[in-house]
Image 1 (cartoon, rainbow, N blue to C red):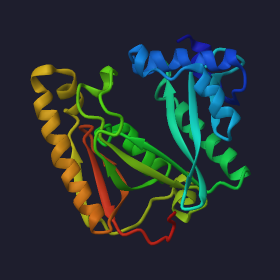
Image 2: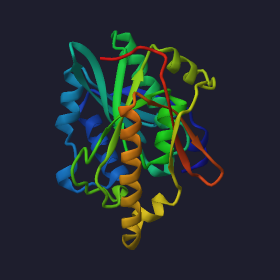
Image 3: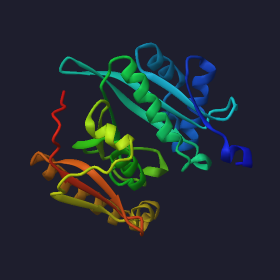
Length: 258
């Protein structure tokens, strides 16, 4: 990354052409390292853009080469339309610059302009940084757990573990989201805590330690599912100086549900 890229402003654009969708496929491969069988082809990106979904690219300055992208699909639950944000990815060398955050804000702006008030996505509850951004920075809540959501994954990032996921619910007009996006601290009584040690990344990357990672995944799944069954929701996420993460669960005082 050169000096001009370090300081260049982030630009988000909607994608509509095959050439742009080709950039999404290249980014997908670079970010996740999937085998060909797990890759989403450009036709799927085209379809998402045609049927009411979202395909957006992130650029730095006046560059025509995308460094990140987001793709969402239209969805319906109990007669209510929402968007499922399936992928948000940024090239490794351009991370920690707020690009993924800018993509999420662009998704929200587009959704609200179309009268859509809910976006959802799934994320790995062992991924500390993602959890922090989703819950603390964006204001999403979590109250559902899905074991092995995608089945076996070819991505090295999964570390051979089952693809367990939690659902992020992003209620776009909620007071909680408005407070989060304005940088205000979310105040609530934390009733339960579920910890994720920073060593999880090393455990997943090391075959001899993957059993330890799998044990942690199973314990945390049980703890989160038990909390959700008691009508608790993830409302906060903390990170300490070691890089450990902690889910904070309490009662959500807003009545948003489909």
